[in-house]
Image (tube, rainbow, N blue to C red; front, side, top):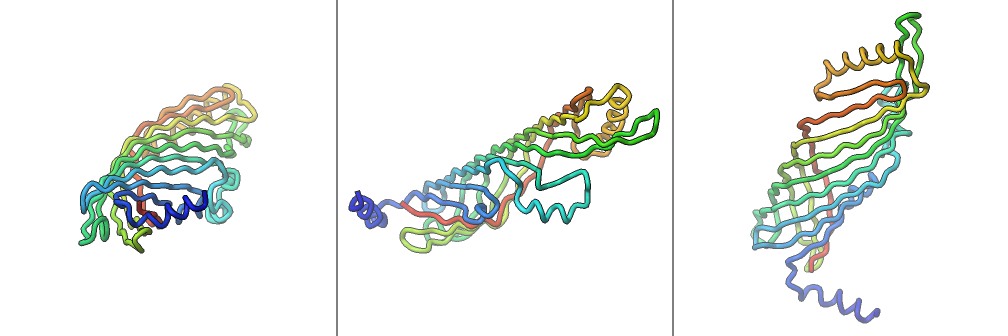
Length: 241
């Protein structure tokens, strides 16, 4: 078995090398696992498939965010987040060598986010004017389909290895979201009306349109709108075969 593996690596430079398998090293620092497969179509064009996965867990740099955001109702160390994204790119390389140098890549991306976070909500009783704090557990899902353009540079380090740098990219598309806030404790009819009024005011000021409904033990939110996004600063190390 060891001889077969050794023979495989020795013979790699003899392959057609129209393929490359890459891993995004920079995304590992934020608990993201990103793998790409690239296939050459011609000297200057390739197609690339990328899959990204972030397991559900505490968001990166949560303690730092708590120091930057002075909101007693939000604790980022208790923010649970997970996401997946799948991207297809059509790349055009401007370098003299095959699949090297500066490139432009129009792409389509499908992504999905799951999250859960406890947030304290202060609700004022309209009869007594006394505010009570409700510990609401927010959980939801966001999914989107978007298109955009990525700019980057690729360099062949050897006959086997390649370095792919994502410089900057931007995309826009449709984002759908559903969020449920479970209230603890449950609230009576008067407090439901007061909470509805507060959320309605926030809705009027929100740049993203959304719908909602309030009951004694939960608030349901839904949204469907155009949303932008960015990519970039990705260091991908790949192997050609």
